[in-house]
Image (cartoon, rainbow, N blue to C red; front, side, top):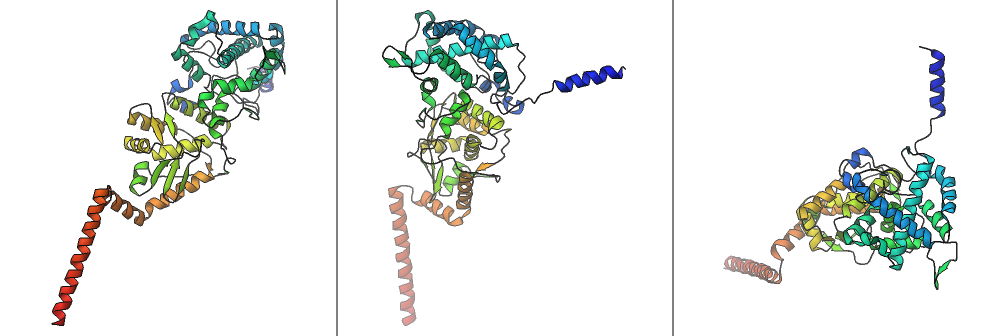
Length: 421
């Protein structure tokens, strides 16, 4: 063994060593233990965006032609040139690489092409949706099933471009103050909000919103709280919470929280648990899985979506729990099968590392557990369920109690009369 050669080789290896993640990193490969539970939830079905799935599954190849068509259409309508885009992308390429958790095995030229085409495709797609102006050359993408799948693919954590790249390129295409016809050109964040408006249940406004990519946007939509900032967090975590069935049997009233548009706005007071309504659709699992994966990788100390998932995992154990929440209008079950909904919630929190917890949720869970363990609450609930379940049953119960009291009084009077004699 030539020692000098080994020394030189190791020095060269060490000099080339760089941290795999930097402060700029925001787009991640989903951790293996989480990904294996449902790979389809993290893998694009029709269109790849960015480098992680570029030239991946064969089913994605057909969209490459349509991406080029859309990119060309946007460049034609914009106020910039191909060369301007390329100069910007070449300058931003080093920072672009640092946004990804894994080493990108692409040359600079290859990455420039990926960014160029994918950005142009997204711009034209968002623009056409905003103005409802679609080119007759590519109506293929207007098929409802494809429109839905493209929108969902754009929300996957592994299928992202950094938002700063998209925003900068769009600003180059339409300098500030540009107008088309008599209308001012919307900002790219406005186009983005319009494209994903279906998921903006909290009606969050686009101004003063800072996001890293589209998955981050969906999480931001759910974090929005109309009246206050997010609660502080604690290292203490909940070890147990009784299910919806058990809580109901103990006398907890579960009802829909109609006062808040924020999905995370759960409340418990006076024996009443209020939960904002959640519509469980075919893509609900996909959205939650990607938001939770983002928090695992990027927001481990601000995992508010994961907290919510943990609460639902405790509340829903069986189809019976789902049925109770559906009756209370807390859940809208568009999957049809209660068992499928229960399986979904039971799977979202698997293989998740939970470092801390929302203090509001922690106190709420402790109060509900204490309520459940109070025997007086269980007794009242049993009485209400078994003897006062309907007006007629209540009347019959009251009549029975009165009859029992009268019989007792009559017996006492008879005993007193005998004693007096």
